[in-house]
Structure formats: structure tokens, C-alpha cells
Length: 155
Image 1: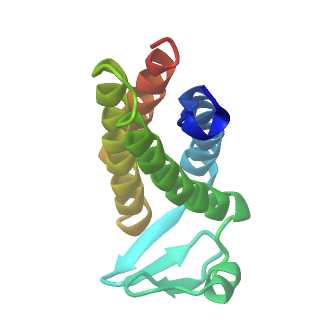
Image 2 (image 1 turned 180 degrees about the vertical axis):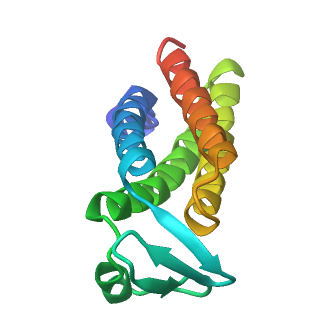
């Protein structure tokens, strides 16, 4: 068999390992956010940051507005990493479709949904005043995603 006839092999273990590392980093950043970043809800569409400044929460916010809002840079990294994790989780789930067996597929799509639920809960946590329920849902989503990716490494 020559090289032209061979189909490229998908190597999901590298993607899974990257997801596990990024999820671990996300967990540490999330713990920092939960402990040290304070956002107090003032009114509909307006939030006061820990620095005493006000910012709008509706619509899009530019990088300059985020930087001048007094938000923690680590919190902004946490938000951006969450978006990256959602995109990578989708890629892992789509790659799993090309693998044999249903175990890897179920774990990858479960992880993708868990990352999405965590991200939505994180957005609620940010916009509506750091409610403990949103924090719990983020943590449970993280635990489900991390556990499923860890189990998928062995399949």
C-alpha cells in the first residue's frame, strides 16, 4: 500500500490532553475569580466593578472598554479561555465522529455540552452578581467535562 492510499489517522489523544490542561488552567482562574473578583449588580444593563467604576453589560464590549473597566486581567483571560475551550470542545466532538465505537463519541459530546453549560453559567455569574448557584453549575460542568475527557483518554 502506498502513501497516497492511506487515510490520515486522527490522533485525538493530543487534543484530549490539551483540553485537560486547559480545563485545569480554567479551574484555577475560576477559583481566583470566585475568591477575588467582585462584581456588584447596580441595575439593568449596568454593573459596578470592584474598582468602583460602572460598565454596561448589554451589547458588545470592546477590548478598550474592558481594559478601562477595572476588571481583573486574570478574569478577562478566564473569559477568553472559556471561549477557546468551547471551540476546542466542538472540534474534539467533531473529531470523535471519525472514531470507531460509541464510547469516545458519547464522552466527547458530553464534554462539549458540559463546557457549554459551564460557559453559559459563567456568563450569568458575571452579568447577574456572582450567585452561588451559577458558581456551582460552572464547577459541576467543569467536573463532568474534565472527567469525561479523562475517561476518553483510555478509550
